[in-house]
Amino acid sequence: MKKVAFYTLGCKLNYSESSSIGRMFEEKGYSKVEFNETPDIFIINTCSVTENADKKCRKIVREAQKINPDGYVAIIGCYAQLKPKEISEIPGVDAVLGAAEKFRLVELIDTFEKEPGNHPAQILASHIDEAVDYHTSYSLNDRTRTFLKVQDGCDYPCAYCTIPLARGKSRSDTIANVVAAAKDVASRGVKEIVLTGVNIGDFGIQNGEKKESFLELVKALDEVEGILRFRISSIEPNLLTDEIIEFVSKSKRFVPHFHIPLQSGSNKTLSLMRRRYKRELYAERVAKIKSLMPDCCIGVDVIVGHPGETSELFLESYQFLNELDISYLHVFTYSERENTTALAIKPVVPKHERAERSKMLHILSEKKKRYFYEQQIGKEATVLFEDEIQNGQMLGFTENYVRVAVKYDPLLINETKKIQYDHLNETGLMEVVELQEENYLVHS
Image (cartoon, rainbow, N blue to C red):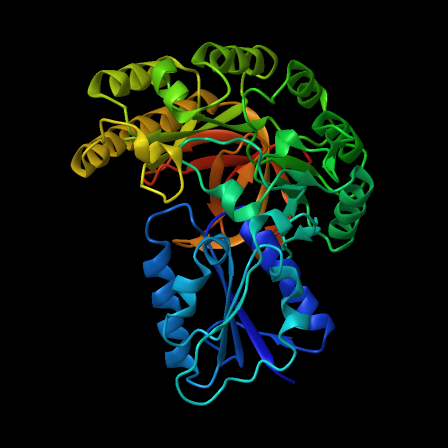
C-alpha cells in the first residue's frame, strides 16, 4: 500500500479540495499519512495570492526530498495553473497538474514511479478555458468544522487578481448536491460547516447558465438536520442582498457572522481596482446587518498599496474603516502579478510605504476586534469547543465568532455550551462563565 501526503497552501477552498482529492486516493487503496511520515507520494496544493508562491513551493519540495529522496512529487493548485513550466523546472518535481486536471490526478498518474536521474517533470495543464467541470469538495480533517465548497471560478476581472486565470469561469454545484454533501458531513458528527468558494454570492451558474441562487441555497441548507451552524466564509458586498441578510437574521442555523471584502474605502481606488461597488453600498450593507443583528461579527478584506493609491487615498480609506462598525480586518499588501491590468496603473506605491500602511491597518484591526469583544461582555452565547489547546486552556468560537478560552476538559471537544462573556485575558481571548443546565454559574 503506497502512502500519500498533502501539503496545502492558501485558502479554505484549497483545503476543501485537498481533502476531497485525498479521499479519492484512499478509495483507490492508498494510505493517507502526514507529510513527515515518509510518504511515497507528496502532493503540494499551491496558492497564487501572495508573491512568495514560488519560494514556498520550492521550500516544500526541498523538505519532501529530505523526508524521502525517492518520493514522487506532484504540484497542483492555482500556482500550478499559472506557472506550470516554471514549476516543472524545480529540482525534485515529477508532475504539474492544472485546474482542469487536478481532480483526475489519481487516474492520470497511475504508477507514481519516480524516474531515475534528472528528468523533466510531466506537465498536465490545459488552458484555463478547459476548466469547466465542477467538483464537489469538502474537508474532513477537523472533527468540529468542515469547509464545504459550493462554487468555483470567478467572472470578476479585478485589476490586481489572477484567480480567474487560475480557476476559470464562475461555476457552481447544484443545491441538491450541496445539501447531500452537507448531510454526509452531518453524519460524520461535524457540528459546523463553513461555505466556501471563489465568489460564493455568484452561486447558481451551471453549464454557463444561472439556474439557482445563493439565497435559495442558504434556505435549503437551513433545513439540514444534524448541522448546528452554517457560516458564510466570504461574500461580495454587491451580491450580499437585503434578502440574504434578513434570512440569516432569522435563520435556525446560519450564524451572525459575515466576511465581506471591501479592498479599499476610497471610491477612486475601488474604481482603479475595477471593483463593482462604491463604498456607500458597503456602508449600507454594514448598517443593514447591524440593524438586524447588533452583535453580528463583520470581517473585512483590505488591500494596501495598490497602484494609484496615493497617501491621500489611503488615509481616506483608513478613515472610512475607522468609522465603520466592523469587527476585524484581513489586510493584504498588494504584490505585482503577471497578466493583470494593475501593472499599467501609475504611480506605483513603494514597498516600504505598502508595509507602513499594512502596519497601520493591522493596528486598527486589533483595536476593532478588542472593541467588538468588549461590547460582548456580560452577554450570553454558545461556544463550539475545538480540539485545540493553548497554555492549558481549550479554545472555541461562539456563533458571532468570538474566540473563547476555558479550562481544558476533553469531554467538551466538539460540544456546545451556553456561556456568558466575562472578561478578556492578557492574550486577547475571551474568558467566560459557563452556564450549566441547572442555571447556576461556575467560573472556569
